[in-house]
Length: 405
Image (cartoon, rainbow, N blue to C red):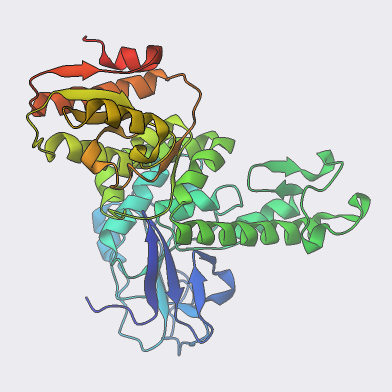
C-alpha cells in the first residue's frame, strides 16, 4: 500500500509518537482534531456523493459503521470501499475489523465504548495498530478527557476530540488531569485558564465547557513535550494512579511486550525514573534483563564479586565503587546488583539503561524488587561460569537477593 501523503511520524516514545498532519495549516499530533474533521456523512440513511475534499481538513469519506462484534458476513455485506483521492482523508473503522482503505487517518467507531475497561481498550487499540498502516494517524472520537488523554497517546492514539469534555462541562463536571469534580462542590477553581479568571459564583456551565476544552488542550501539550523528551512512561506511571482503569490499562499494555518492544528505542539519553513497582515491567528493563542473561558472555577467569549499585551513574564515578575497584584491582569481575535493572557487569555500566536510571533510595526493598532482581541474578549465574562467587553487600534487601533458595 502506498504511503500516505498527509501524515508523517516525526518522533517516537514507545507506541506514543509525535506526528504531523500535513494540512494547509499543519497539525502536530497527538492533538485535538475535531476542528479539522469534515464529515461527509453516513451511508446508512442516504447515498452520498464523493466529496470534493479540502486541504484545510481531514475529510471523513462516506461511511457505514458497524458495532463491534458484528458477524463477518455482515461486515462483508456492508463493506465500504473508497476510491483514490488527492486530498487528506479519514475513514471510519471498527476495532475488530480495522481494514486499511488507503486513507491518511482512521477513526475507531467503537473504541470510546471501551474506555473504563482496560482489557477491551487494550485489545481495540492493538487490533487497530496491527492492522492499519504504521504511517497513518489513529483517531479516537468521543472519549478523551484531560485525565485519560496521556494514556490514549501512550497506547498509540494520534488524534482525539473534545466531545466528551464538552458534554461533561454541560453537566457541570469540572475536569482536570487528575480528577472529575462536580462544579457545585468547588469552593475555588483549581485552574488558571482564561475561563477560570473570574469569581467562583460567576463561573457557570458554559465556562465549565471552555475550561474542560482548555484543560484537554493543556494536557495534550504536556503529553507532546513528554514524548519529545522520551519520558511519557515516567509521567504515565504517576498520572494513571488517579483512575483505577488507567492503571489497569498500563499494566495490560505491559503484558503486550512485543507490541511495545518493537516501538521502543534501543537507546535514548533521557533519564528513566524508577519510582513505582510498574517500572520493573517497562520494556527497557525487561529487554536489558533478557539480553544480559541470554546474550552476555563473561570473558574473565577471575571470581565474581557481587556489589551494590550506587546513586551516582556511572557506578565507577561513585566513591563506593572507587573503593571497590581499589580493593579488587581487577582480580575479580565486579557485577552490580540494582533495582530496577537487575545485574550490571562492570563493562556494561555505560550502556542504556544502566547509566540512565534514577531509583527511589530508601534502603528498603519491596517484595517485587527482590523477586525480579533475584530472578535476573539466578538466570545470569546459570548461564555464566565463575570459579568462585564473592558477595560484598549491605543490608537485608541485598542479602536476601543473594541467599540461596
